[in-house]
Length: 246
Image (cartoon, rainbow, N blue to C red; front, side, top):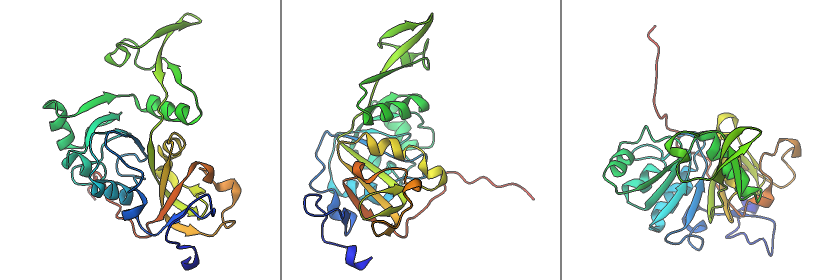
């Protein structure tokens, strides 16, 4: 892989999208006030190296669409600690004390979105679909202020598709052209987040040369991925350890 580790990867001159490190891969992509989609479920399948790199850029006033905000001190929780997030679009916030505190104190805006709806909103945005109708949330605060429409005698609400300025995703294996393979549960929100970004940056544990991946095993085609970094030794934390008494 040393031959593939180029200083930068520009699609105009090469199909190699691999960058040397996360410290530089985001610098010219991020700005204050942008919208991001971030893959992961709890701490499973999160792009931890890219999140840390985003923190180091110092950008602020971010709106982030992600299943959750990580935990205190890890994942997106790092960006909460540094007050870089203005708004979260999430379906689950129960494991982050700082997130709870900021929300109750009115320091952060939260748009609660049912989990399946959030996944579908990302998928729709990536497919160029501006909105989808769903029954989920009818009769709750989720439906307040949203268009209601009846289909065959059943009421649905309109949910807008999500298109992010930047998407950050985590893959298990990738080739230098940006084709991605996710591993088991880490597949979660990553495929939808990858497609809904105007620009998508991925990190992968294993990088191979072009042509080494079985085309039938590719989950996200490289056409959706603009930049790629190698993170061979990720720190995989357990969100909540539960053990059984013997």
